[in-house]
Image 1 (spheres, rainbow, N blue to C red):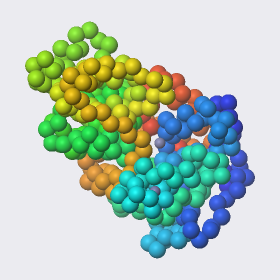
Image 2 (spheres, rainbow, N blue to C red):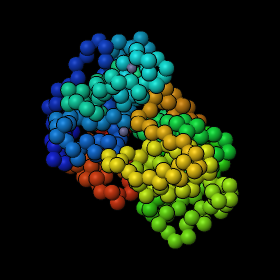
Image 3 (spheres, rainbow, N blue to C red):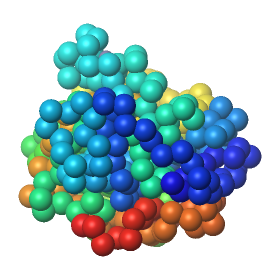
Length: 356
Ligand SMILES: [Zn+2]
Ligand SMILES: [Zn+2]
């Protein structure tokens, strides 16, 4: 089969004779239809020494060709799967927090070249217990976005976004947009976004996922924002929830400075370096901060329900579609590597696009 493989040194190559996955009576095999490129794929491509030889891809949809040991799957089912492969037995898994499972390393397309991912014609899933059949009214193209949508859902759940909340989202990338959608879904009365990239800001407004987008570097912006949040902190107002999806220290501190007392902050955006923060602001306002990484698999059900009821957008967030060809995929990685890029989601089409 064909697969796109990491060569290291910011390079990918195409292997037309990559070994087909072999049925083992346990792990189901799918014919991959769509695979999104994630920021973590790009990061792994940048530091590819560890993942040399890996076939990436953990946001995908496909058609079952071998159900493995699943009692419910059958050949031809349209599915998506957890990006990690939890053990299903530890204390975390038992309480529905499989995102905290320590045994998630054998996750396709993520860590080890021995467990290839979805940038290929076929792939073997981690475990049949972590596969979801798609609702009839959801396309395979939309389904490849369930995984990043689940991160947005988790961001909201981590700070319990609820009816009447005034929510700030920092960053208009895919996770920021997903988080904003779920903030509305949970009944937030006002959702604002900070974004310095004007193309991203414009798109978030056009998608209708936020009420306002502000450029935090613009003069007088704090007064403008405070008008929308009951006069801001000095007048007893402010944002009640803040979903930091950019990983930028400036965005974090800017957002924290706009919080209402006892507000809750979710750290979603990844930054691999130490980040300075005005802790005195956190102390004075008695804020709660929580970090998230990945999301529990049971969130897939909520995402599929919200999407099939038309309450969140998925397919509309795809900004580019490319075929599974090395030149196109390499160019897409290079584009996403540029911090100024304004893509939301680049989707790789594996099949002919005719299977819906
Ligand atoms: Zn991802
Ligand atoms: Zn576990």
